[in-house]
Image (cartoon, rainbow, N blue to C red; front, side, top):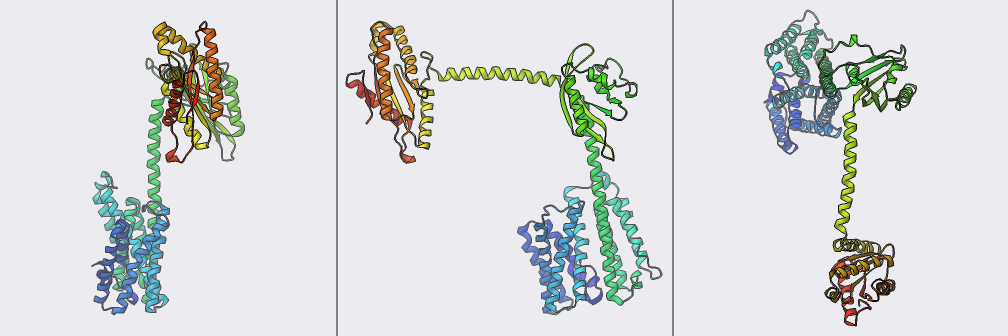
Length: 595
């Protein structure tokens, strides 16, 4: 329908419409719809274009050529928009508007080139087609896009929707001014419609710019088709007059959209600043922040009211009325520094001098002493203010009482330290056998797994020696568990003295122990285990008055294989356990190696 209306009502010179609205509608649909639905719209525009051109009397060949150009024009513009990085179209951002115009120009240049080459048209024909379609996109697409956003996102506030009479009056003004300018031939009143368009743009933003320029385009085209309007003052015939009208509309649209984008950006910035100022005021009120300014030329110091409160120089607990800032005089700079703790004065003075000398931001934390001798911790940060000659003229800073935070941080650190100490003690208790003081079964087996994994990764050697005390049950039965406990403690402590620094000895059962020897092969492990066996026997003879304690030992070494067949801790301990029982069967107090 829109194609047929465009053909019948907007014809200008050479059979080319002054504005082709269908291009703008087509491009807007592509921008607003999901990509997977584009094929149906491409087919729809092709059918509409072919039908419209055939109905208008265009030859079948030319109708097909025009249809090809119309159907691919929007696709070229759409994918170019995506290529140059436009993810979300907005007509209040100048950069995005510029990219939109580039896409519109490129798409219409493509369609004009296709038509001109396939129909062997003239340069004049090429230019008319390109500008006509470009005007359609630049006029119709923004309008549809903005109206859609208004409806779906409710971008108009309630206050704006409550002024329909103003909107109607503004649009009627554009209609009246444009109709009055283009319905007469006495005066070249080209300058009046732009004035009306800018007024509407000022009040309504991008929406007003798009719809008011569209109104001018429609009315000027209608009157131009009737041979009326200032366009009659253009010399050179209808073709030149058509070029002039299109150029006029392009300049008008560009001016209006640029003005709308700048105005929208300005309003957005103003709202953002208002919101930021409001939030800043609330934050300062809640945080009890104060600000100060030191004039470097005159040496005068300004304090906000909260700075007096922080220093304890003003009652701020609400029991007395607060005075106006004008009645409060900040102390002289020298006296101000004397308010700091004596140990912090040189530090603060150095920070400020360095900030002035280097014109760099500063930040410090220090202590101040109030008149009642209470100490408060404060933090201050700020920067140097410069004049138009880039010379430092003042120091501006914020000050905040952070006493509570400092005290809380200190208490938290103390609590963390105590918690870490308690956790370390708990971890040690959880990993230690309470009777012997050496690693318990759980910790020993976990460490063994880690040693084995490391040995497999690096291809290193590792062995274990499992041993238990011979005839320990008889010792308990004959001498009691107290003596048995003494023997267990002796064996555990003596083992630690005989082994290497990297070896691990742990108790894994009643009288059963295991030694993990990382980096030791079978031969080396046998030497260490034999030394341990002899040492325990001799040491126990001296300790228990000739009643020597003997141990039986089983040795097993880690064997490397493919990952799925790699020996784990269970298999290694099983091998050592079998060797241990072999030693017991052979008479005890000996050492055996796993096969």
